Image (cartoon, rainbow, N blue to C red; front, top):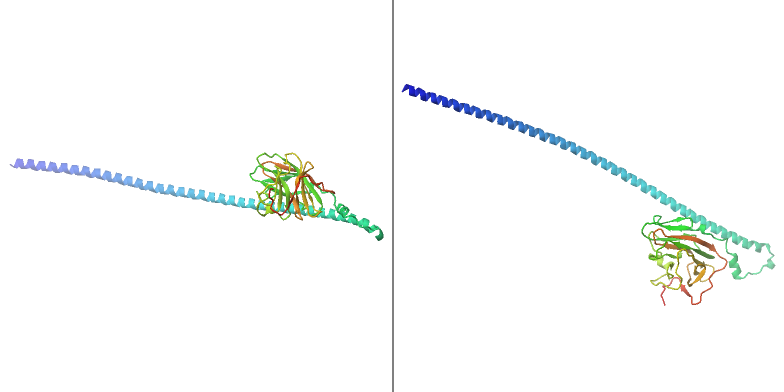
Length: 340
């Protein structure tokens, strides 16, 4: 019995040792697993720290890029402002030059006129008083004609240099879309004056115009001759031979204006009422206008890209070339025109 008890006790001890060994093994495994988890946690923590560092670096890089972009934009804006200021200065200078040229032309014309008046008066002052006789009115008008004008005196008032420009005696349309109404200095307020030239490089689709405008008319960029209040201040001789003024009617009766063929306008400011007559190759046209304003400018209108008008005549003449045309028609300036 004692032996059996000892065996049982031995078995119990052995079982306890196995259980302890198993528990130790499990504890070791758990410790390994815990250390592994701690290592993974530490690695994860380090990864997050690294990610935060990288994120901070990226933010700094983005901020730096944004600052550089803002600096570049600021520099670009500064350059644009500087460019705009330069363009404004150029435009102001061009306007000053045009004004000066216009004033010089006007003063030259006035000086020539005064010289002519002086020449007219000198013979009268040298003759005895009893021999002086009144001259016929027509002769007096002829003596008042100053020295001849010339095309080089004409200065085109171009509202938009991007659409048209003057090159010597030629007004040229650029390739920018739109139209150009170009009026010329000097202002005409006396004498018999003829203005003319020829059009080039126009298609048959779009029309071109020559005419006169009241000296108070002002034409803006990309405007027609009849835009706004200018409809009441302009006479238009269209390329198809019609003329227009106030109203929506186009009055037929003149020949069409052919390209490379001379067309001209003659104003007689010495008679009352003052008149406007048109000519094609020096042939008087059937439609004319009377009672035109006391001071006018000549103008032309271009539409087609790269088209042009070349001035070949600007002079004051001693006698009017207008003789009247059978079956011709004289239309009144300042009234609404209607086709009969």
